[in-house]
Length: 313
Image 1: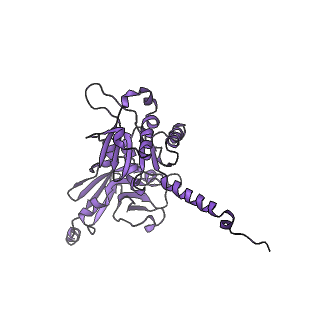
Image 2: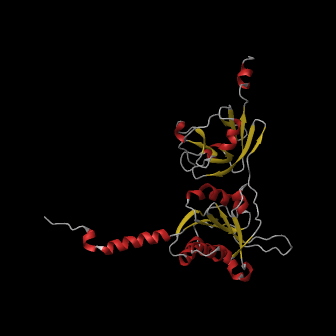
Image 3: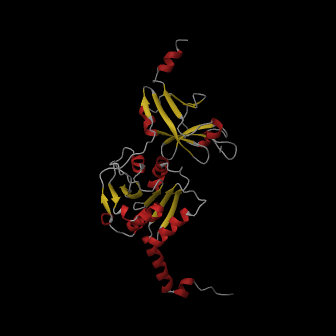
């Protein structure tokens, strides 16, 4: 019988040293996420990733999305706000949407590449409204504008690669932001639809439709709970042609093919078809004919009023 010698006896300390080296290298890795409107058909995203690896070879690159609607910074903000806190602190997020700086010579403020520090994360984007749409009512921990943006006009040809990525690499390589950017007191705010409360009513909008055709609204669970968890309600959508009066815990709380309303992982009200999808048997978007921006109304009945009304008949 052949005797098998344990691998650690063959390589001895070399294996231990190699293991220690791998651990050290993994510890030194920096995470960078990419969110762009460039799609995946062209070479643009590959060029950005090449620039990242050239500037920070130990970086781990994570794609959040490259299918943001062109120039739609509010959609980019939705993607980032939905997942950034799943990453460890210190992660650098590059947002390559409408990233070309804008110089306004008429006296009003232009838009320039900037860095937002928020809850231990770094967000690098052109100041085109993204930061305001992302933060909503939150306040930044720190906010900087990159220095010397106008000194190299050739960088404007591919600003995500030539301006935002180098700044991201400098952050990941441990440079202090103050050495290449200056504190700035304000940032722009892009228009983003928000849910509003009226008397016995929440009026929200569809702000995203995912790959399954699920309708994701801007109605947060905390807003819903202001009316009390036991208050009767009806969710109306598509001009009251459809409605739901129950919030389910999971999609499978209803039979296959049935409509369902849940609060998703980000706490946002979502209307879906259980096990439905646009590319198969039809998701909520396809079956209900809903689009981004369409209104979702939640009408609450004051506790006790429904029973009082029914007692009259």
